[in-house]
Amino acid sequence: MELLAEAVVEQEISQYEIERNKPMPSKNHSYIQKNILVEIDIKYRKQYTLLSEIDIIMPQKPNCVPDIAIYPKLTFDFLDDEMAMTEMPITAIEIVSPSQSDNDIVKKINRYFNAGVKSCWFVMPSFQAISVYSAIGKYEFFTSEMTLIDKATGIELSLKEIFS
Image (tube, rainbow, N blue to C red; front, side):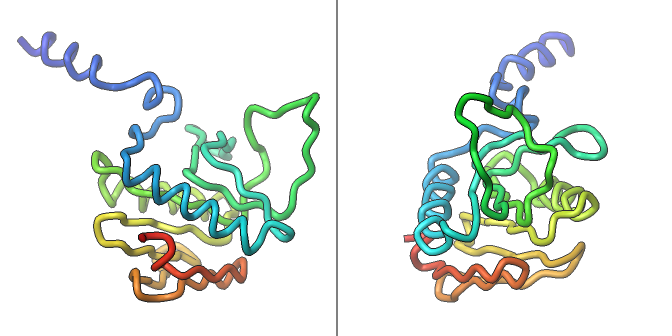
């Protein structure tokens, strides 16, 4: 009976989840991810490059795939693409999915800081809130009526725009 239960669990895990070592995004997750990308791109395109769902090679395995990675302005060679980034982003943004625990995200944030990332955003759709971490265990909590301020990048975003 246990083997049957394990086989059912294995079938429920999608190829996306296996390849990226993270849960499948939901409708809310996808919508908020798009809103964050658009809002940052409109205001900060000349200063930063945003990459979504890019594999980041971490000093210790496994690699991480943040929902959004913010880099200083990057150059692109469209004839010689890259499948993974070896350089750490300035900021990693993680949007919690319904099947993820807060603890999973916090562990990932700690890994990012240990690898040299300067700030991490923990986006909580059900609370319409974002915690901006500036170090392990040190964060500011922003709700939908506030303006998010990330001191590591200087990025300021109206959360009303993100969650509307």
